[in-house]
Every structure is written in C-alpha cells, then in structure tokens.
Length: 636
Image (tube, rainbow, N blue to C red; front, side, top):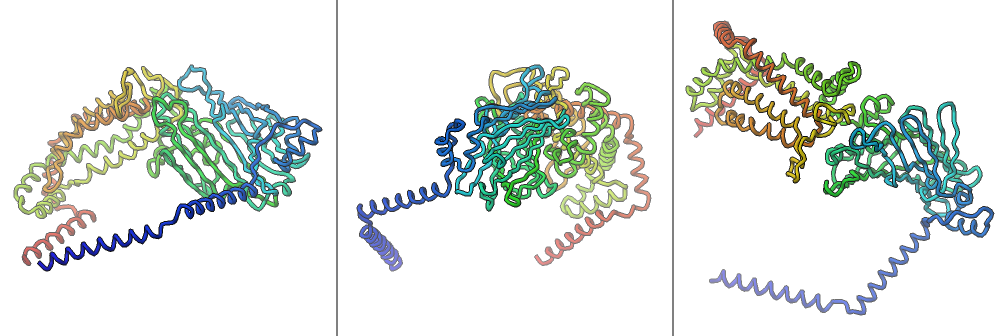
C-alpha cells in the first residue's frame, strides 16, 4: 500500500514540475515586437555580409566586345575587367574558332575561353560499325575548362568568359596553336596546344607573362575542368559500369573515385586525371604535380529507358601555383581509345586506368592474357572469335596438369571412402577420435586430402582475371563473330517486348550456351566429388549443396551474363566445353581406379610417411582439444 502511494506521489510531483516549466517558458516568451526586431537585425547582418563579400570579390560578366578606338567603352570595360579590358579591344574578341587536326583527332578551340569545344576521334564510330557517327568526346558544350583569375584589385574573373587571341604556327610537322588572354601587348595568360602527326597526345602548356601586377600571386589559381560523358556503346548500363575517374598520384600510385550517384575524392600530388569511359578516355597530365585536387563523379543514368545520352558528370578542380610571380605548367591532353597497348606506349602510367584487377589477377592479365591474346589477334591475323577460341584452348591445356591432379586426388579419396565411412560408424560418438583416425588413414595410405583443393584454388585467379580482361579488351570493340555483331557487347538474338529484372529486355545466346556447358560439367563432376568427400559430423551436407549448385550456377550464368560482352560468354562456353573434354579423357583413359586402389593398399603395408608440418600441427591441435575435453568431463 505504501509503495503504491509513493508511485502516485511521484507522478503528481513530475506533473507539477512539468507544469511549472511550461509556465516559466510561457512567461519568458519574447513579444512580437522583440521577434520582429531580432529578425530585422539578422537580415541587416546578412545584407552587410553579402555586401562585404561582393566588395571583396567582384566576379565580372563579359560585356559586348569594345569597338576599336572607343575610349568610353574601354573605360567601362576596365570597371568590370580591370587589367584584362585590353583583351576585349582586340579583333579576336568575337565568337570564332580555330581547328587543328591530324590523322587521328580533330580539335576545335574557341576564342572565348581558349579551350577545346570539340574533340573528334576520326578512326572510331559510335554504337556499331557502319553507323558513320564518329566518336566525339567533346561537343555541344558538354565540357568546360576554366581558370579563376584572382586579380590584384580583388576581382574574380573566369577565363572561360574572356576572349583569347589565336595564333597558329608550324614547327616541322607539328602544329602549334597559341591562345593568349591579353592584359597588354606583352602581358598575357597563354594556352599553347601542340599537335604532332598521327598522335592522340596533345601538348598543353599554361603560362603567364607580365601579369605579376595584374594577378594576385599570393593565392593559387583554381583550374576547373568538367566533362559530361556521352554514351558511345550499345548498352548504356554496361558502358556506365566502366565510366570512372582515375588518377595517378604520389609518383606512380593509382586510384579511382568510385561508382555511385555522387562520389568525391581529394588526392594530393596528382600527376594525371583521367575521365574514362568504357572504351575511350580523356586525360589531363601534368609534369608539375598538382599539390591538391577535388575530383567529383556523378551518375547521370537513373533510368536506362530515359537517360540514354550521357553516362557520368565528371568534375576536377586543381590549383595552379605561382613561381616567381608567374604561372608555368607543362601539361598534355590525351583524347583517344582506352587501349592498354596504346596507353602504355606513352610511358606515363596511362595504362593503369585499365581495370585489370589487383594483385595476382592483374599480373595474370598483364603478363599472360594481354601478350597471348595480342599475339593471336594481331600477329596471326585471325578473326577475334577464332582468336578467343584458340586463346581459351591454350589456357585450358596449360591448366590441364592441375585438372589431372585434382581429379586424381578425387579418385584416391573415392577409393578410401568405404574405410572413412567405417571409421565414421566406429567413432560415431567421438567426432574428435574419428578425425584423428581419419588423418592416420590418410597418412598411412599416402593420400593428401588437401590435394584436390589446391589445384582448384590455383585455377580461381585465372577465372577471375578473365572477368577483368575481356570487358577491358579494346580489340573486341565492334568485332563480330557468328551471330554476335560486337564481341564487346551482348549478343542479342531476341528482343523482348518487356523488361525482366536482373535479366534485361533481350536474350543473348552465348550466355545460354555457357550455362548449358557449366550444367553438364557440374553434373559430370558432382558425383565423384560427393563420393570422394564423406559427410563430416557438424559440417554442412556437401552432397545437398552440390545438387543445389548444379542448378544455381547455370542460372546465375544465364542471368548475369545476359548483358555482358559476348567475348566473355564465348570464353566461358569454350572453357567449360574443353574442361568437360579433358575430364572425360582423364576419367576414362588416364586414371585407373583399380591401379589406384592397389597402390593405396601397397602404401598401407609400407612404413607411414612422415606427416607434413601442417598435418603434424593439425594432429597436435586435435590432441590438445581431446585432452581438454577429457579434463572437462572429469571435472563434471
């Protein structure tokens, strides 16, 4: 009764305290006049701050170019452009363009801004061969290059809004275009483009002369570069998967920004920035590292049915540092294919933007897959489909000794299965003892239970390397084989009138063939694996898992490879066919089960081999566990 009273009193007390607090807050509530006065005060402070910011940084908007000799208009220009008013008085202060080109690329540079407004690759077509639509990495204002100019009179001018004066010269076979933003006859900011014959690389020097009294050299100038990447391939989702910002930093390290709706990285000491699409890329490389950078990637494909023009929006902001009051940067532009061999030829680490995989996977691609496939596709002069088939045969033949060892180990385990099952029944109530006796049997028979796993693990890196190699193989682009028009894209044979989640709106044939091949391969090997590996107590039922995987693996192949490049599906189809053939030969003509059984029985009569360090350690661990278990049982 007393406890209930205490609870009731507590509740009443809390209610009273809460009521008092509400009353105090109400009494101290500011009046409407006080609220209005505070609001007016905040608005005044905001206006003052905005005015101060505007006074400190005056961003100019370029007026109409001045008429030569019009001193009144020149004076007006000086109010907005300061020292760069001179640039608006020149004949080049108009919407005009200069074109330079060689056998591979065509560049169009605008007077206004002095940057490239069109970059066309002459040797490659969009979507499919014969489309007659050349690859245009830059066009229709999808790219901007701007330097924010901080002046000594507290202005911020954007170079993209100002007029540059063009001058074209030739040095030997090289074309040189100088674009100068002038503050006087000999005072200017210069973009120099150097185009060599038959080359994708364009020299790009940025320097200033005589601007130490015009530009504020106490701060770095921000170079801003952005690019909205056009779709160039048949599948926008597949292309978008490989559209990425890559960068090289700290003298040789490489990394990327990442996929997502909005991703950002801020690396330091950057040597180049690559706005990479699937098979083409634009790279800005510098001989003097950018000390800092801000790299932003935004995904533009929200709905594949609607967003069909662009894939990503890339942005980069880097500082240009002054040296002795001037800017002087030696840089290069690369406009061309994301082809490993072409990129590597420039010796600037450009090839690192090709996603070949990390660690051992990358090594397999660099030192085995790329040289071998390059030899088959170029030296012999085969069609790319035949080259893939021969490439697959050579890889599988090279791996056949490993396949043989794996199957031999399975055959030995299959022969021992009756004895292992007998041990399981004998020590059914003592799992630890069963494991120990099983290990003794393996050692006595000269069988290594891990021998079947190790070969399979060795083959896994080659399988993963192929998943990286084929989507990155530029050679496959727009090369046909059988019914596939483009081995770098899906080989659609039926267009569906609807979209199936995960699968798509089409049916590709090579993934179906690959799924059928992997089904029969798993059906062929699963029985031996189940017989070779008896069920262990406390472990998952491998027999059931294998039965499930027989159907799950082909289904996954069918679904996920439907939108992948046909070259990868062809490789997997041929790979599984060859594996089936090798296994058939090994099983029926090489491995003799009776001989294996006789050899094991003979080994049992011999003195057991000294167990390996791993087996010794495993035996010690099991003995320690057994001893601990006995001690625990005694205590109980």
